[in-house]
Length: 213
Image (tube, rainbow, N blue to C red):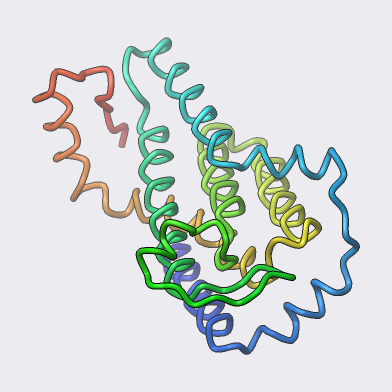
């Protein structure tokens, strides 16, 4: 049920954003928020950068292997949902080429835009990664779910305070990460057997995962 609710909200925000219906509120929020590049804000936002995300993935993968000798199912979900999110963000950025606040609008061929994907605003990669991570941490430690989602929302706020994203960018991405994490689980009967056979065929049992139902 939650997956379908998120799907509907994603489609709604996507339509409002690309059709221009959020332009006014995007501009209003951007002009209202103070400009800041303070060290705490920059430090917090960088915890959701690609390098930091990879470090977190490797950290939890190492914990899994140390504890059980192979990856846990949630960690495999983290990796796959991260890949899905990365792909969606890159495609949408390159397709719509929404300029960041205070940046000039450009129109590039798709492949060139893909090479320069960080120039564009919609959607927010940092926020999407934070949302994926919050979904994962909620599964591992549900007791602290409010803290994990406070972190994700905090990342979204840093992107706005740094004036590198519009409101619509971060709203879409907050939902996107959670949606991708749910999608991986809902489709596990399709991909998990293939994944398990592949890692066994390659002799990479450390990457195998036992699904606890």
